[in-house]
Image (cartoon, rainbow, N blue to C red; front, side, top):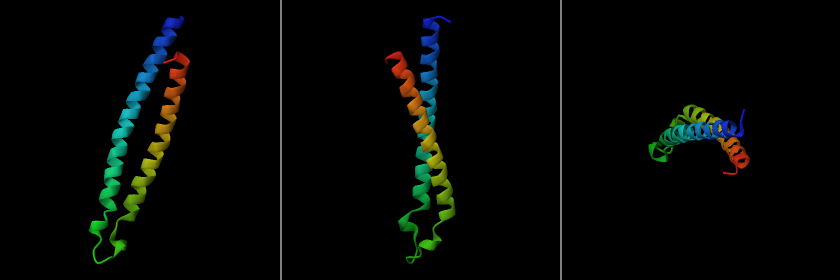
Length: 87
């Protein structure tokens, strides 16, 4: 494989990884919005916070954390490839 082809493959890989990052950003926005809706202090009636749906909030936070870890890994991969290409 020629150097030119390798560079094209790596640039294509960067493009793919950046698209995945954008997709993850949108998913994260949705998780954050959902968490805010679930843990809304204005929805607490008579100071009874046990009415909050904490099980749903925990699931959303857990999913958001998993997505956060994946996003950090994607950004690290992008950084490594860009360093290889001197971008």
